[in-house]
Image 1 (cartoon, rainbow, N blue to C red):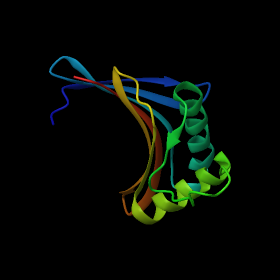
Image 2: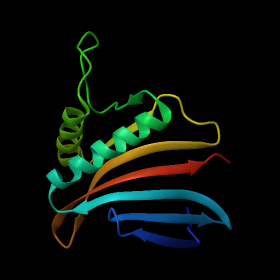
Image 3: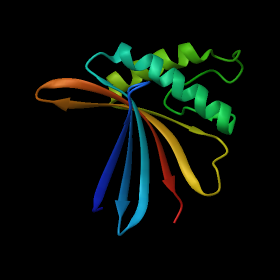
Image 4: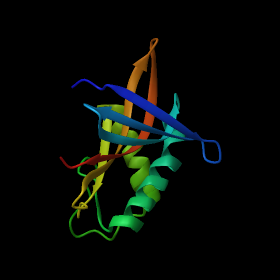
Length: 132
C-alpha cells in the first residue's frame, strides 16, 4: 500500500496527534494518536479514554485479545485498560472495536508496541478507515 501524503494536526490541549493518510487522492485513514512512550503504564489512561469515547459514540465494545468469562460481571474499563497494556506488552498489540460499526467506516483502537533504537515503545491510537 502506497501512502501518497500525510498531514498532521497536533492538539496541545490533550497532546493528541491527529494524522490524515491519503492514497490516490482519497482519504485512506484518520489516526488519533493518544499516547506514545516507553512506559506501558502511560498508555493505560489513554486506552481508558479511547474505550470510554468509543463506548459513548458506538455502544458495546469488543476486545477479543482480553478474555473474560461469559458469566462474569461486567469488567470495569480501568481493569480492561490494564489488561490491554499487559497483552500489548507480551504480544505486541491489543485491539478493540465497536460491536456495531458505522456504515461509512471501520473504527477500531490499537495499543501496540514497536522497537525504536533498541527500546520498546508503546502506542495508543484510535483509527477511522472510510469504507470504499
